[in-house]
Image (cartoon, rainbow, N blue to C red; front, side):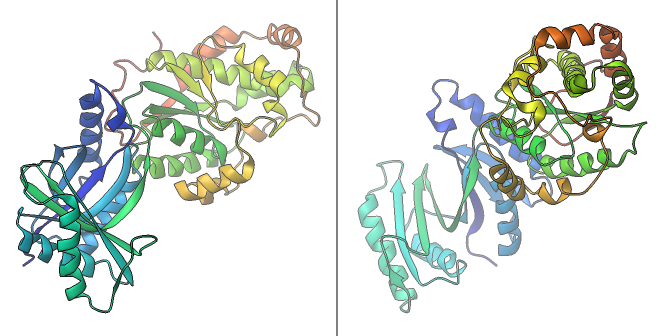
Length: 406
């Protein structure tokens, strides 16, 4: 039987900079973790001085503890995750716990001790703790070397509120703010590479994210919908997506393509998408729309065309990727785990009824004149009413009382 209880320390950075409302952010992160870690043997999660403390059930193996820690790494609001032990505030116990923690960090060649005490009631200061625990480890691991910079492993010893927490495996998390601390946004979500990254970046800033996917159905197959569901399953592992509305959009694109000047088709498609997304956002009590656009990447993403599209809605449109290039976005998608899914071919509304030469510098007056030929108001309500919601695991999400038209 393990002598010490396994714990996971969840460190945060940005939350710690908050003022009087810091507790609200801490509680939100705690609730998110409690909900997302239901598959792991967790006894309880406590808030202690400047961090969250996850207690693991007695007998939990190192492998399971590490899997739990890895699951926490991708949760927005988490700056660092440290996997170790709780022990008494007694030097012999600290030394034994440090030896076990360091042994579990193999393979390594160099190490150092980083000790801190949060309460001066403990008689030994941090510098002396470093020396004393370091001496125990040097005796236990004579073939290893102490190295103060660029060491392979840092053994952390934290004396906090009557107990000591000792760890050697410590990994950087994604940081940001806990989902649910920054309101709700509605994100236009395709099965491509860019939009899942844009949605994730907003979740990392604390927003509850509701996706809207415009499917080419019934003019195309529903293949893109399955890819979007796969993407959402990746995002929900860390509570980053709450719901996805699937909007059958193909027939409306066809209607636009029959009479619209070819160069303006894409602009009118996107303006209708924005209007529908805005209506869904109103029903979801969301504060902004989100897209995965990057300036100049394709014809619809020039400044003139962005301006013409934004003019269709009153709600703010956020573009987290506007200054990113494609390679940066691909790298982010690979780290997020959505790149391979997004790389699969699937016909969707983005490739449906596309003109050969889309306008790159649309004039708003021309766009509005072309749009006047269509019953946009009726279409928006019909499309929003036809939207099919699919829910995902997001602890901070509270669905609207009614998903139909108001």
